[in-house]
Image (tube, rainbow, N blue to C red; front, side):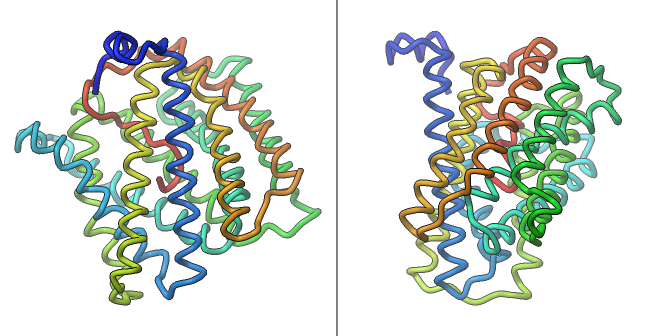
Length: 314
């Protein structure tokens, strides 16, 4: 991937603006992937677990050039058990997320998933001893309030899909925490390589028990799921290299917009005003968290890949 200065010379767009545009593009790819999963679960007899396996398998194809360029040395590590554990946790998050998308509207699932950074902040505070000042506490509070507005416990029944999204968010937050610890020992390229490779056999096990040999038509759409997700991931990582987290985080709200527009066209589904309001409050809260994170953590410098996980199950 090109450095920020070279990007700006080629495109003529300032790096922060280009970073925002990449987040908007990444959000479109993720929303397309999520709606494709819902489309397949509603129109085809393919279980979400099988779709998760093919998402990882086809996603690996996109990452192969990065791994080939690094050679076999990319797999050298003294923390193999940590990588295996992270792969299991990440696979659990993906399986939960894919199942949730088969049970609830994509816009609602996206809104609930935006609360993910709160779990990351809390886990970092508990297990890594990171300091949480007044602004970060305010960010956590606002994000939780936003989540409650979306879910509205006591006014509407909390569906199994919502619980799956929340479980997925907690799982992927633990995955990010482990990734942060692993960066003290291994390169980001090694961390991503192990997660990508190990998740294929891990996701195949649950897929095996619900397996239905896909037709070429179904295989095409599952290939789209893998390609959409991986391209979205790469665009998101590049955006974090070009712009600060505090600038990029608000643009994540465009995931809601893309998800709503695509769902409206495919399924005539559109999030309620409560969902939009809650998602907006969540984004304000997570933006405050990102602003504090930017002051605390230096910009990533790895030129190839990153340990960033955009959202649950992506």
